[in-house]
Length: 89
Image (tube, rainbow, N blue to C red; front, side, top):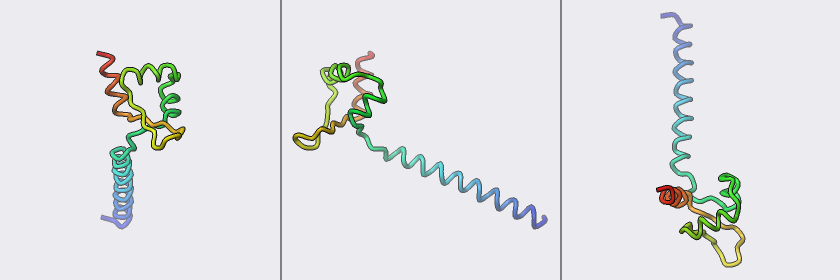
């Protein structure tokens, strides 16, 4: 085996290990994703109006407000998915 092929093999190994590390880090980030979404972001992501959001709340979607008078409203993503699945049945 020549030195050149050994160096090429090491570079390839390092490249593969680097890529695997990045994939593992991305997977870990997905596992620890914050389970709540802000109302404005939810409306934008789902492309729904506040009127439709009010209908979802009437069907059981719970909103989270951290303090009295706080204007930031949060919704749990998993509860929204579960509610939509129930309504689809």
